[in-house]
Image (cartoon, rainbow, N blue to C red; front, side, top):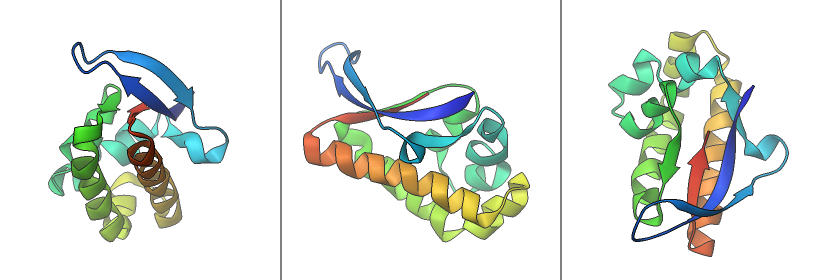
Length: 120
């Protein structure tokens, strides 16, 4: 099973997802179930203070429009330390960069459209 990216419209009152649009192809994949621990919640990611991303270790991540800058900042920290993150998780640096860049692209697309992002 893969962790996938969705562009979502979020109800501002309830915080629930009103509409979800999958991001197709490899651009919509942020890893496999194993990557919950090897990438997203590995000790290097946690040490970088990427707590929202680290939450993917045991759940999904819903990023409303107001949180896009914070999650983008977490992604930038992970990308700047991709080698360390890769070593901590037993992954290739290319894998880390590819998956994190997918999240950044989804955040960018959501911001332009006034939407949010769901990773699950």
